Image 1 (cartoon, rainbow, N blue to C red):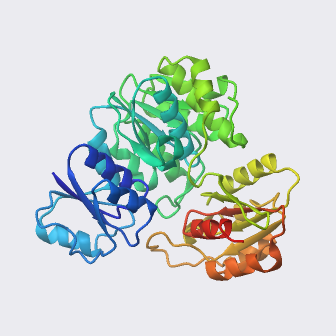
Image 2: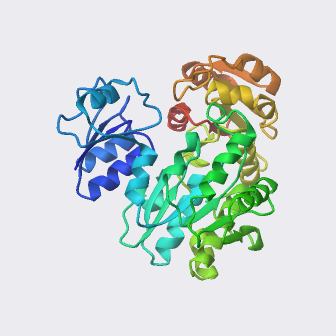
Image 3: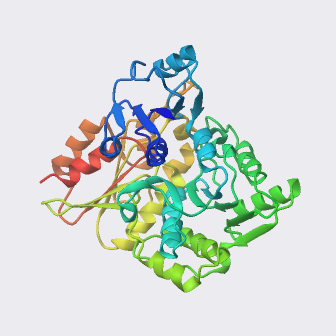
Length: 426
């Protein structure tokens, strides 16, 4: 089969493309810019271009798979429509790819990627040889965001955005947290929670949910799901002691408890699971230590873009660096999220010694039209508004950073490039 992936540089679609290439299919794709992710795909023999005018879609294409960032009127999708090429979004395609396997779907507002990576490594260490799709690059998977296994287990990260995970057929669902997010798709907290209830309903009769029953949001969601349809199994991760990890953060220890519970459910010895977790080395953009600059500043890159994630990451950095000055640079992600969670954002940076706020990163087309006032947000936080990444970098390079500081760069957008440049600066 000949598959074209529009938005192939995305962290999810790139994993799908790699797996399908490993399955023997001819895969090509495009993205708005080339990156380390697309370079890795190219090294596998996947043709990748940054030309998205539609001309790269093969005439004999059997399937076009697109990321959520690619709208229906994008040239490649228009060409596919005119040519009669079947189209699927990423999660529809992932659902087809994983069908017939025992799917372990890790979902939740926060912690999906780290928990998926931890679970994958625990299963690999136990000899279960799973196939894996995770929403970040994992050093212990050879720096990849995917793995092709020979067993019948498929461990994957299941995103709730626009009901994406409803295309999956899970056998086991692992739920990390349930805090309102993706406000463009879910205008109310109740509509957000309803998506998870629908996902639970996709479990078979012997399906299992693993979650934190001491978390009020998670436990109430379980009760709501039980009222709709009997759940044959609910495993409470909070009955297990938190494992010892080599990475900081209470939130990471909570994620690890979910993996211990999953391992026990699958018949993996608890001691073996804890040993695997202790060796977990973290992932790309999750409190990733980029290194120390020549001037003695430690640079940390993190994907946090929700107030709860920011608070968790700041707390973890305080745990790791209790006596060092913590300078945070944050790029808001999407106007609608910034507006809807504005009050929480103003309180999310407690523990930072200095905070800098950039312009909003718009990852996809926003239909609401309202723009977040980031100048006011910075003022309400007690931070400094720095605008563009170029201006932010210049500000940091002035007299802001001192030897011994920790620079925490946070956001789900292109601010990661700033972290890379700062860590390589003199």
